[in-house]
Length: 296
Image (cartoon, rainbow, N blue to C red; front, side, top):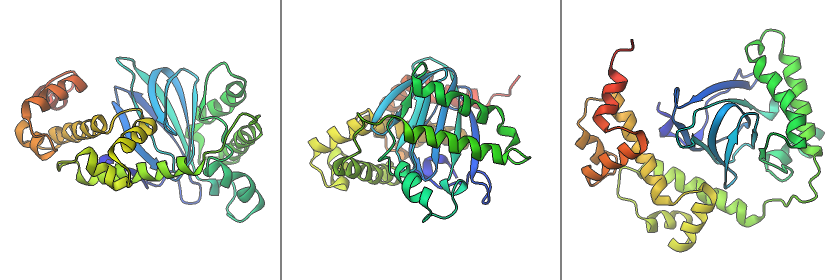
């Protein structure tokens, strides 16, 4: 199943009895980016080389080497190439059940449930050089460096490091931190609904009014909300989604460029080719030929 077929990522990370995994990514060598999505696990992202653009919690961050991002479960986020910059990063995903199996336990209710709801998460972007980054970086780096030892005697150390990370996050001075209010929470739910609607109907004609109706907002309020939450307009997001889907179709089928353009919601083939070239740096046919040509 293509990752574009679902925005709520439900893939299992790690083992059922040890829900923890570390993933390695390079942009653009292995992927050009990852579109807006969410999952139930807590995620820690650390950049180890170059620079990339991340969106999370309705904000956009350009992250460089040793910068850290904290992504609570359920938070909508995305990753994309920053101009022509290359980037290497690691994702650490885990369920809080790894740390506390009983969801009614003292630690689960007092600490982990708060982080999961983002009420006590002071910062999302932990920039290199800050006090918080200096405390978290050695712990996160250790998890990355020992990622291949997850299931061969390193499990207790993994849990120990995660507990230390959670303790540091929760005890950080939050005097200036304001919990997300009801309107912000409502916006997150609206955004989930419209992203799911887009994934289901992107091949059809979708107007801003259609998308606004999904959120029960006026078009003007919807456009403002969407830009704040994603960092882009809805029309740009829709076109980006259609282009990504088209790129997959170019690889997976022998359909013509016209067929692919029309079946992915583009009414004008010439516009599709121009937009595709602007995003991928080549025409659709050149893109297909590059990916299908034998590797030397």
